[in-house]
Length: 417
Image (cartoon, rainbow, N blue to C red; front, side, top):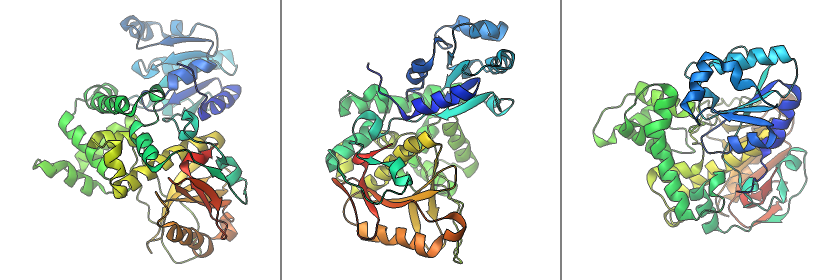
């Protein structure tokens, strides 16, 4: 399979130029190994043989011998190698020694200790439409963050095409697959989460039926700020019991294997008396997992614009997270006690920011524009945080353009780095 360049490539190269090691982490099958191999001079896969795990326990330094950068794939299967790598980086005193790739955090999350100044992190996600070749990439997120005054472009994706891409997902192995093949892959992916990924990563055998119902509850509430109580009630809808502590444990397990990545609230200075809401919104590693967990295909999704709207918002969040990682940016959401809500806030390391609402179709563009202008003109303290670099509405429509107010309309099928 031909390797398609990822936004993470430049991020990884930059980290390697400055640090002794880089940890690639993200959900299984998102492309960490392939990306790591593009930058590695040698590699070893710890899941390829039980003997390697034995060697890791008895003589981990032997696994580190090889041309550098050396890729240690699925390193979390033998967390003991972390300290060996850390010591090797200290001894060698040179950048670009190791790339580690893993699909789960170790149970004790050893990487949070003693890695500062030695090992950097690169979070990989499933492919954005720009990376998979589905987007025309005519509207640059970087240009928007630089204050572009206008946008133009045309998406080649119809409404039905966007539904198909949502069901397919951004897994690199599915680039050339049919949607029907992708649906099989995504159902199997969910089954592996229940039966293998979570038990292996957490060391705890959890109820497969409860995990399945938890993932379905998350899928039904994707792109919302559902509480633990709401999710617990959903999980227990079959008449069984489920308390919030149990649901929290299941959410933590899904986060540990990078299958769940909630969207945090934006912390910003306000000039009004409004108060920020701090509840995160629910997003899975890829919107396709939400569709798979509920058995939703592209035709059914397209016929249900309400649920499609939530799934599409999750697609936008996924793509923005991927694209903003290229400049070490972060994505948040905004909601205050007056009910004003902005789906995504993009923030750069220097504090500059932009805001993007999400609307599936043409309906609601006016309301989205009004909300964005209210955020800028009435809510955010511009004197403290600066004016937004851009205001935009992400859509599943055809044309990109700029409205007279300066708010950009950006079909997701035109968005690029």
